[in-house]
Every structure is written in structure tokens, then in C-alpha cells.
Length: 314
Length: 276
Image (cartoon, rainbow over all chains, first blue to last red; front, side, top):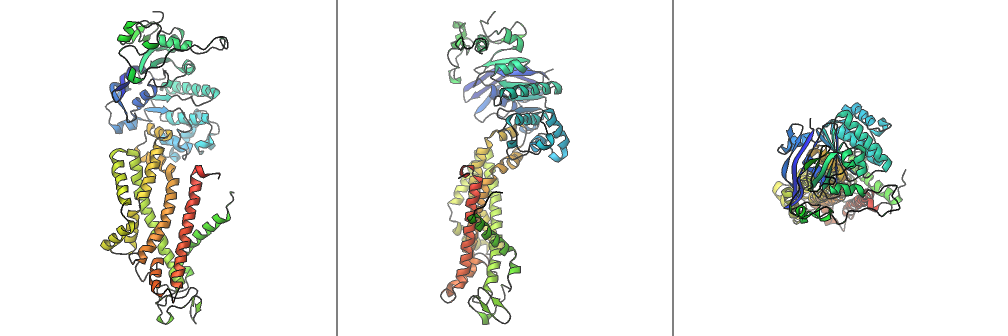
């Protein structure tokens, strides 16, 4: 069974293509990490799934399916009803993603479209589930009275109280301390498993991916470079980009002996995307074919797909 | 408890006196503001007769000036409060919608604002009263429907700012419709600056009411208004200074208090001026 399916999604600003035919599926209870560097199109992909793209960005192709419902042709009104109920989202800056003038309880109750008085017990129970101590006091507090970690727990409560089928988490731990990060990730992982929520986790942090993702899709410059089970991708990365990315993570044992490993060059700007593989300009394995043709995703070992003519180890 | 300076205390005292006088006009006035007594015309402040005392004197028809000023305060307060409410409602609704929906909604709303702001308010009021006829409700209507553009501008600019904040986007992602987002999330967060505008407009409304009544287009005789009392006293200003001096002083004092209160409120609402 598949909770959320994205097929050949393409997005553009004007004529400039920024996301090019990306596809992925998430099953209930599964955590899929969408990983890539800034500007590779992770966040706009999330916005496209919610159908809340900024005015400048257009969807030029592809199909998004939630359960059995195709979102692409859904009327605006029906789409609004799905948001928060069937498909929810949490954000990077938990403290600014909560209304400063509304109490925690009211904001959670809003996700149920009910007045707080009516659903107070349920809201309180949700606060307990996301691990907030002293829920009877917290429920009537304002966001400024909470720490960043608590705000993120409240965001998770808001996102999950209506039991959505899909949760999109856009860099949920970037703004938090490392210790709090681990707690929040563990919480997300546990709630997703308990409630059979499909999670799309957007991040640039390989450590976060290794921590909680079942599967990973590595994005580069608006395309999926490689996708597969997290353990397999980490153990034997097939795409040269994935391999170099993992090699560039400093290991405690190497420091301070070696210089940091880096990938030479820079991510191309969307306007400079050529006809071939977008990583070709920085890739040590690239040849003339890579510059001229776009490699399609094709299967390699361990249930993985990779978009490369010369995969590592293949 | 935060300490309040003497100046602030005076502002509050002035405003409180105005509101209490307006609401309790019938309690404080010992004489009927409409009862004429031609034998007691233009008596100076402090005049006492066998049956009545006139602390601020009498007007050209022998009516008690204190009572007329107290009832005039009531007229001022009611006109100002109602017309500010009307323009607040109209202006903020337009501003919120223009800021949220953008596109042609904002173009229409903001061009309407520019148009309204380029028409002299007094002229528009005179024309409207000439068509509709003078009176309390027409006065409120005229003031309310001509003074909304400032609210629209402020609400528009603030909505644009707040709409880009993560919590508004989060509300959208959570499936809130535009009505709910604007009323529950945007409006409370832009209320501060709007209250500051409303306060300064409140002072202006009191002045406008007085001006229009002075011109005979506002509160109609025999009912008292500070403007119409001064208008009637104008011809006696040499013989009976109290007819213009007392309502004028009241007008000046109240509007000054309202404006100072507006400054105080702005300092409290605007975080940039805090801690100074």
C-alpha cells in the first residue's frame, strides 16, 4: 500500500525548470528522507504536494496521489479540507511557526476545526503523547512561554492530532540543539510507527537521515540522483554524488589529521542546467555522454534506483 | 506594577473626566440644557438665582452653559466613537482583503484609498450633508465613510508583513481558510498599530464633529454640541467670553489628551520605541 505517491513532478519559475520529473512513494508508517543541499528543490516539492506553491512557481507536469485521491485536479476547497486532516506539515522554525497571540491549546484544537472547550481532553492527551510535561499548565500558555524544543513538540501535536495519512516534515530539527534534535526525531519516528503515518522528511543533514529514515531519496539540482533503503545507500552509495557527499562527512577519528573532503565546484544555477547530467561538471567519473544525455533512474543492487551512466561499483 | 509617570496619569485623568462627564451628563448637570430663560440671558460664570446656580454662566437664550457643555461632551463622544467604529470596520476589512488576496483586490482597494485621500474631507462632508440633510446619524455616516482610508493603508501594509510570517503559512498548511486566517491569526497580530491609528482618528473625529456643528452641518439646535455652542457664542465674544472660551478649552483639552494617549499607546505597541 502507498500513502503518498509523487510521479514525474516538474516545477518551473517562468521558463526555468527547477524540479525535473522527480518521483517517489511513501508507505504508511514509513519515513522517507528527501535529502539534498540548499536550492535543490526539496522545500518547493513539499509545497507542491500541499498545493501551496509561491505565486512565481508553477507545476509544469506530474501527478501527486494521496491514497486513492489525485491531488492535481482537486478543487481548491477540497484541497483545503485535506490539509491538516489527511496531509499535515511541520516546519523549520518552531517558535515562529506558532501564532504568538494564540494559546497552545487553541492552536492544537484548530487542527481539529473544533473549539478548544469541546476537545480539551483530546488536546491534553496529544500533549502527553508528544512528551510535554505538565500539560494542564502548558495547554493555556502562549508560545513565548515555551522553549524551542517544546514548540516543535507542539507543532508535531498540531500536525498529528487529526491523524493525517501523510506528514511532511521540512527540516524539523534544524533550529534545535543536537540533544533536542535526537529527542524530536525519536518522537517523530515513534508516532509515525504507532499511527501508521507516512513521513516525508526533508533535510540536508545526513546524520538525521541515518537516524530515522527507512528510505532515502538523494536530490541534486532538482532531480533525484539516487534512491533506496537508507542502510544500503549509506553502505554502498551508487551515485558518485552520494558517494562524495557521504565521504565529505568528517569522522571524529580523522580530525584533525586530514583536510576536510569537499566536492569541487558548485551546484549549477537552474538557468545553467544543461542537457546532460547536472552533476557532470563536478563528477570525477563524467565523460562526454554525461554532458550530452540525461541519465534515467535505473535499478541497481539492493532495491535501489540510480540516475547515473557510470555508477560507483557498477 | 509598572510605575506610571505623572504626565501619563494626567492624560488618563483627562480622558476619564471626559468619558465620565459624557456618560453621566444627566447626573452632573443641575439644570436642563434645553430650558430657556430669556430673563437670564448671557449671565457671567458664577451667577446664582433664587432657584438655580450657573457655575459657567448662561448663553444667549438663558440656558445653563455647564449643562450644555456636559451634554455636548456626550454628543462628541458618541459621534467620535460611532464614526471611528464605522471607519475601522470598513477600512480594516478592505485592508485585510487587499493584503491577503493581492491582485486586483488590492489594486481596487488601494486606488479607492488614494481617491478618498485626494478629496478634501470637509468639502465631502458639506456635500453629503447637503444631500442627506444634517443630523446625528448622517454625521456619523459621513465621518465614518470618509475616514476609512488610513486604516486601510495601515491594515494593508501590516497584513502584507504578517502574511509572510511562518505561523500564517503554517495555518494555511493546516487547512485554514482565508476568513479564519484573517480573523484569528492576522487581525489579532496587527491590532496594535490599528489601535494607534484609531486613537489619533478619535481625536480628529471630535474636531470634525465640532467643526461641522460650528458650520451648522452637525448636531442641530436646540441640542448642544461644543461646535454649535461656540458658533452661537461667536457673535457675543466681546460681551460674553465664556460662551466660546469654555467649550473651546474643553475641545482643546480633550483632543490634546486623546493625542497624547495615542502617543503613549504607540510607544507601548511599537517594540522599537520600548525601553527608551
